[in-house]
Image 1 (tube, rainbow, N blue to C red):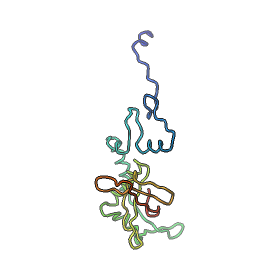
Image 2 (cartoon, helix red, strand yellow):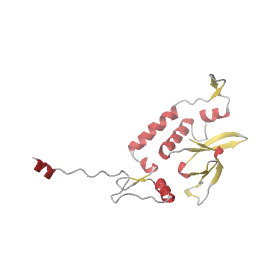
Image 3 (cartoon, rainbow, N blue to C red):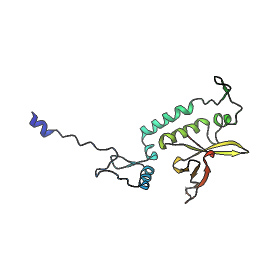
Image 4 (cartoon, one colour):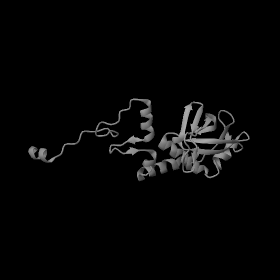
Length: 183
């Protein structure tokens, strides 16, 4: 019996790392190579690159992101003011109350805005929105594509400005961190 089982059963292949090629994977020696590997996506066992955009084309990933970003987006958001150590009251007269509860920008509802920010956070690890200030008050929160935002220092962030159809070569807007809301 042992003879036949050895003859007809195939031994299990040696386990491999999920992100390595058959030839041993990727060797990263410099910080530039590390940045390229992180920005271009991870290599799967099949050798295909996996990026946030390609992952969203998989139905299971899309469904998970839709569900995980939809729950916090539809929960009520209360802005409170502290009266004393134990008491808080609604701050409906605060300028940010209207922004977060009614209209974060001209084209999104608060639920859509929070869903988009949560999806960016889940897929890309961070979410950014530019604060549009007019007459000393924040008027809008404009979502920014996280892959185009670069925080140079703890106080300065830069992002590329898109032109219709393509990215402008080398264009960037430097903003202080206080004018960018990060999630």
